Length: 201
Image (tube, rainbow, N blue to C red; front, side, top):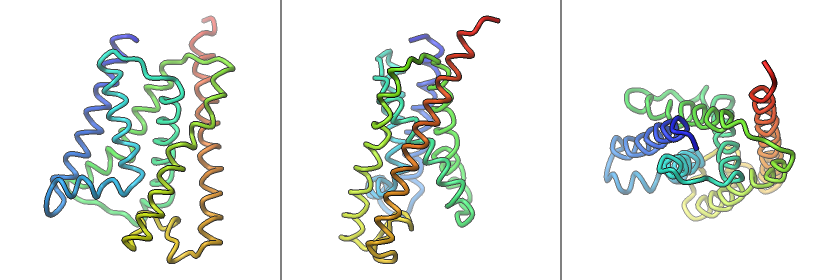
């Protein structure tokens, strides 16, 4: 692990955790309750994971390849889903604008760039592809249980009360395929980056 990789990881960790802390403080009421409520969203799960993982790297510790791949894939989905589906109806202002930028653009883009810059790839890396599904499966179970108990569904495409089970299951299947597709794209980009780095000038 190079010093540059560690410094970049530290900057990502600081941005991710700092944005979550700031969002907790600017919400109304108790900062601790606001912090807990943020974890209703997959975006926060992914950013918090990025903060912990990149902080681990900044300390000079090795991050397993399948973990960094799963994290990168999750953040890529966060950015794509937000900007394609949610951003048109979401117009944050003030400090919310800055935290929103960090959650959906800065942390995903910088983490993906960090992962690509490592540029080490071999054919065995494809075996990590199923790990792109671990976090979304766990989160979907959480979101459905939380929604059933509270009546609040963090994302409209997981709102069972509005969609009904047939459409909900169709959405979950589509999301599963989407995560696998994004994971495959990320692997392809990683392979391309590694080829460009190792090719003769």
